[in-house]
Image 1: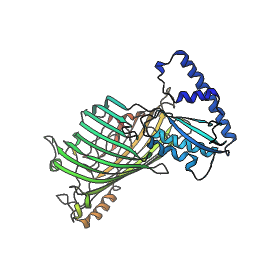
Image 2 (image 1 turned 45 degrees about the vertical axis):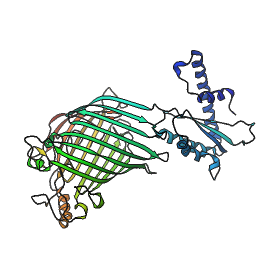
Image 3 (image 1 turned 90 degrees about the horizontal axis):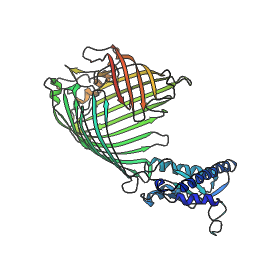
Image 4 (image 1 turned 90 degrees about the vertical axis):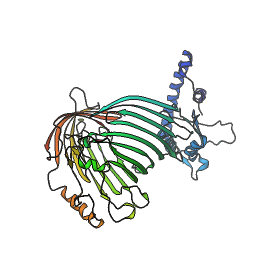
Length: 507
């Protein structure tokens, strides 16, 4: 049975007290209560270690302070804990494991302050409805604020912007989130989005999201501006092995406009509207210990998109697929890490709406390769097919890189700052076998794709090497590198010297 002082802890937990309104005596009492609570938890740990097979019955679960969250939403998470809703009895070890699982679900909903505290008590022994094995579970879950507004500026390679982001949390009491974003910048001239996200059946591993957006981006490497308007909807879920899946639909109007005076004939031919209607699937299996600056682990990722096929309509049709893998290996406990990664992609043309003529790929959909967060040592979209000064993209690519990261002298291995030496490279090709209009027959597509894939290994890839400084911030990775192109084709645009990159994914 809990002591009177421990009972006072539970009573105080049931009341949300503003620390600014507490007297000094109340604060001292809270400190003593907290110390006693810690002693009680330590005693509980000792008890568990000595009584793992002790039979227990969870008679009640109470979530404290969740005032804005629907009762029915929370019941789906905690009701399975109750012994009355189970076919088999608990041991103490099993009960604590299930309580920990429910607490983890509450934490991952993103609407409660972390950590969520767990307290276990015996019910009143004078209550005739209780049994000696009964325990009561209290979860102290303080809700986060109902909204957050952020403003700021960002700077990256050849781009700077200012943004405002507003997030509404727990909108209908079921961990729903509404996110509104607006930004103005030098390259992404404007971007606006409004997204609604909700867990399904109170499960933080299963979400539904719908999003509407509009943006205008200046693509100087291809002498035009691209305006997008559209929406997406998707389901996301986590598998039992920890892999993440996303399945969604998108409908996007794309406009190639604002052509430069010296725009190439290829870019001019692409000017105007197109509408893409597609379904996508993304699979991510990320076992790296720290994705921004991994010390050990691996990443596997695939992204697939089917557009304009059958009932999808639109005016572009293709199958587009990308795959990526990365591995990080530490050298003991020295802070030195070797990382290596490869990625590749294919855009396979299809006939629109069940027709017989495959659609030629458009500049909106082709792959681009090169840049400070991609193949370093080359300008943004500097690799692959060009028409004059314009990078027009390709249908097939392969790229890879390896880096050796060292702790900065006198700074230490426990900081997110590293020196790196790297080598990376890749090839980006357009599909072989097109006629002057970029068209081909369905019968010839398969052969043309095979010939293009085979030609990836015909010559050395364009590549570069260099050294640099890496800083891993929790929200992005920053790199300053000195690069030297080693192999470069005539039409490609290398970048010898310093470059600065900001991103969340690096080759």
